[in-house]
Length: 123
Image (cartoon, rainbow, N blue to C red):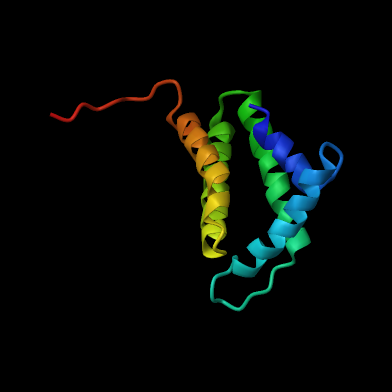
């Protein structure tokens, strides 16, 4: 489950993957334009990318460390981040870039269900 810390580090710095870091730099410029909706608030794309990366690093580390209430909060933080990224791609007209966010959203949903998930049978 090192996906989120890896992606967070790639968003924050080019240490692990310089090509992916530069792609994130360009894509977060578009995300910052559509972030507040129609509120006319301007967000710095560099700060926005940095905050997203730090949230992914911390949340991924909390999930890896173990089962606690903080891991649950981390799952919901990642759930909201991925939901927002998917909506942001869609509002920019990049619907094919929603696919990785939707896959990650499904993985987070599995994490949110936990090991004691209940399946209901509809009759």
